[in-house]
Length: 245
Image (cartoon, rainbow, N blue to C red; front, top):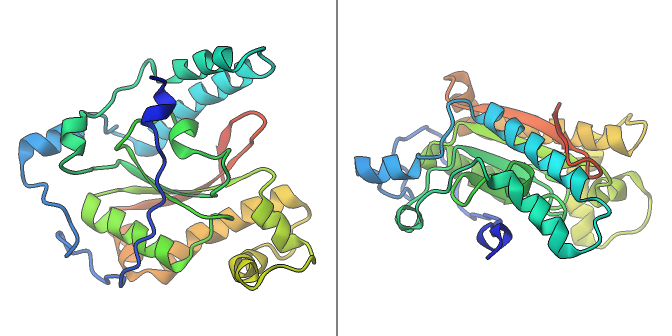
C-alpha cells in the first residue's frame, strides 16, 4: 500500500460556537488523561514545529522536482514515497483513541496543495482546515480554536499557493455565483494594490493569518500567552517549495 493511501487529508468544518477562554478542557475535548496514551500520540511531535514542517517540505520539494518528467506514474510514486523514509508514524491503536497534532494548517482546497504531502507528515500529525482561497471563514476559525484549546496545537500555518483560482477570481471582474461572490469577498478586501497574482496570493495568506487572532479571543489570548504561533506561507506548485511570508 502506498503512503498516499494512508494520508487522507480531512477538512474539519466544526459548526460550533467559538469559546472565549483557554479552558483546559472544552466541552468537545477528548480525554487525554492517560499518560501512556498521550506519550503514544506525541511520539512524532518535534521540539520545534515550524522547523519540522520546513525540513519536511525540503525533502518533498526535492522529490517533487526529481519526479518531473518521469515516464510512468509508478516511477513518480516511488520517488515521492522516499520523503517519508526518515519519519515516523503514530500507532493507529493510539489514534483510534485520540489525537495530538503538533501543528494546524489553513490551506486552499486545491487538489495540488495537500499539507501532509507538502510537509511529509503522517496521520495524526497535522490538523488540516481547507477551503478555496484559504480564507479565515467562520467554521475555519472555530475549527482552529478547537485544535488549540482541546488538542494542544501550538502552531497554525496559513498556506497560499501559486496559481490560486480563488484569488484569481477575486482579481477578475467575471460574474460569479452568489456563493462564490461570498467566498471571494474577503479575498478582494485583502489584495488591494497587489500588482500580480503572486503578490495577491501572499497578501491574502498574510491577511487570513492576521484575521485568525483578530476574530478570535481564544487564539489572540493563546498568542499573547506564548502558547500559539500563527504564521503564513506561500507554496510554489512548480518546485513544491513552501516559503514563509
